[in-house]
Image (cartoon, rainbow over all chains, first blue to last red; front, side):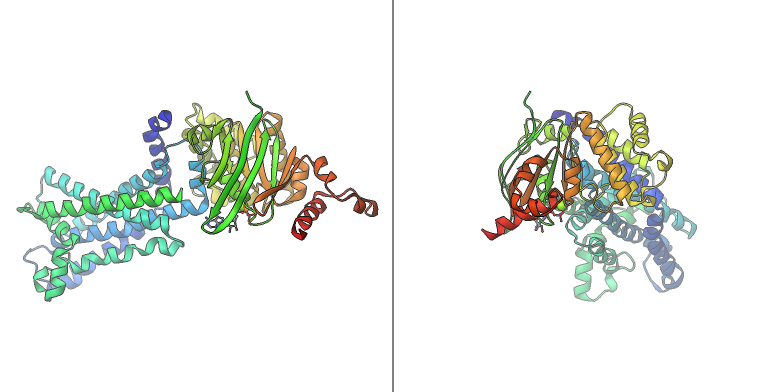
Length: 255
Length: 253
Ligand SMILES: Nc1ncnc2c1ncn2[C@@H]1O[C@H](COP(=O)(O)OP(=O)(O)OP(=O)(O)O)[C@@H](O)[C@H]1O
Ligand SMILES: [Mg+2]
């Protein structure tokens, strides 16, 4: 038992290496994940942006946080896809019949999700710089942004794990991501919530995306962050814990 | 040292309301080849999954290499390897990378060397650096079995190792299995092909309706065949005849 535990991190590293190879050998997944958010960004900046009053003079700066969240929400769908394929193909059974920590294959997928989403986020930020995104934020603020995005990725990844483990078809494995991708539309990601009608506004202002977007936006533009960051963190950590516990329960049942 | 590599007593398992195993008893001697025969849905895979710690039984006990599967799963996993019914290879990695990955997970020292030896032994050296998704069915199955041999586990489980292979690939797998047993490895395999069991196994057990209804050497099983019939048919009864005869007898009761 002890020896198996001692190897947990090296086993997880091997699993991470394996799925990173999958990603680099099918770079199209990174492209598919980033292309829609980038297209949205260009559409909003060059077509709709002129008509949207945000109170910020640069609309890309306003838009970018929401675009990043959308990219992450669609990126985690691949985690659930990869997990589902592993279960289908029987490779998980092979992993589980050799003496490694039982959860190492799962953690391998979770770490892979973090790394691949970080790559997508970087790609999108680069494109945003080309379209005029500028930030006066210092290193600490950027680190805070990275931290929030990482927590958000983890929270959604554990939801993706539940979907991947319990799906009965490939399509089912990815379907959970659609509502997540659309959450930013009913938030402060694209337009200020003040212009929305009552009930919609109430929903928008109290859902996690708004708090997260507002916190990231404030950090990037060097403004007072206020309570948003704590609300954002609370949402991320809360969702992550609930999803993690449920995912582990499903995993124990499946293997 | 006890002589049994695998001991199973009164094994029971149901999926929801569907009883699959209703008291399975069997023993496999060290270094022998044991074949579990059964038709589709008989529960062969279920037995293998329990013995390889992937599934928990509802009742009865099973021990592998002296370790109980339910209470000492980690020790069991160190003694075994599994080649499941459906090829468990990573399609996106190359054959070599697949082998190295398993060698790393088994914490072996010279992973490259281990991979090279197995590639050579299974005639996969030429395709070693191609992605597995480009392999033929036979190559994939060979790689799958090669992956099971990484780390030289003393007991290996093969769930329908030759299903879907052409006759030539099938013969290759048989050769490998025989070699393994000659080198002292215990082999537990399941099959639907009676000639396969006849060719390979030292002992054969037939799983039917949740129980082992016959268990012994080929000669033992042949004795169960009603002798009157032998007089009229000129050839020796094949295992297929025996199988159908035993099941037929059971069902009449
Ligand atoms: N996870 C499961 N949930 C419900 N029923 C199952 C499950 N796995 C297997 N079964 C049922 O249990 C029975 C035995 O299945 P098993 O896979 O062990 O048979 P098998 O002998 O390996 O068959 P085959 O030759 O087709 O591989 C079948 O009726 C099957 O439908
Ligand atoms: Mg089966």
